[in-house]
Length: 99
Length: 99
DNA sequence: GCGTCACTTTCCATGGAGGAAACTCTACTG
DNA sequence: CAGTAGAGTTTCCTCCATGGAAAGTGACGC
Image 1 (cartoon, rainbow over the protein chains, first blue to last red):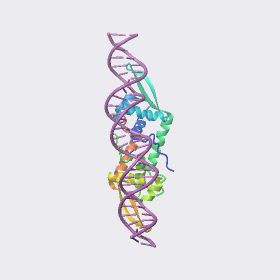
Image 2 (image 1 turned 90 degrees about the vertical axis):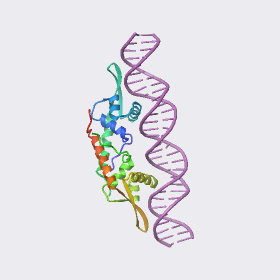
Image 3 (image 1 turned 180 degrees about the vertical axis):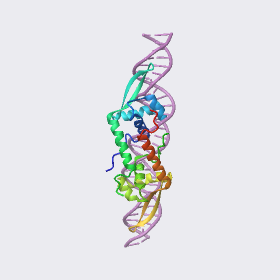
Image 4 (image 1 turned 90 degrees about the horizontal axis):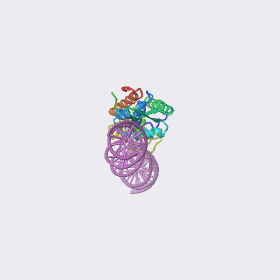
């Protein structure tokens, strides 16, 4: 069988976002933006895409007098990411190739 | 360090093409098309993209009275694919994460 | 020479991605 | 409470990628 590659997760920036969020409970919006070296708007849109698929959620909290957004993967998002990684790994190992 | 994800290889269909070509010397165009369940034109364009990056090459040979195209990864293509897989693996393992 | 097979390329319509800038919300400041 | 600034968000727009449909090309086979 060919495990399915998830098109919602696959795009490079989204893959990187998931990889950053997977090992932690949550991460600050600004931290993600800096780590990815992207813009506020680009990140915001990618997060919307992940949230739209039910893969990420956001939480507002005050820190340093300012309200900031904290992002986290939902359980479904974490499952989807792990599944996607498994699919990539299978691909890379030629699992299920008829050749 | 974050190993670089190669945007030429990353798109799902191209990743799958590379995964199919990596373990073999060469593969027939029609076989790729059937394995990927895609159209002639779509496959042809993806192969052009890989060839344009120097990652794949084609050879015409006659088989069954008809001339058919055989596709193979170039050494550079194989290196690029392996590098990309390494980058994906590193991402999945959170290598180099500052978190 | 003609039709056919096996791709290739063109044309077109759709969708994703990102920059710039306008907009919203919240939190301070005075 | 009005005003201002910070932190994202959304809109607008433009560009690039992708893919289907169909026309085009080259090599055979008859």
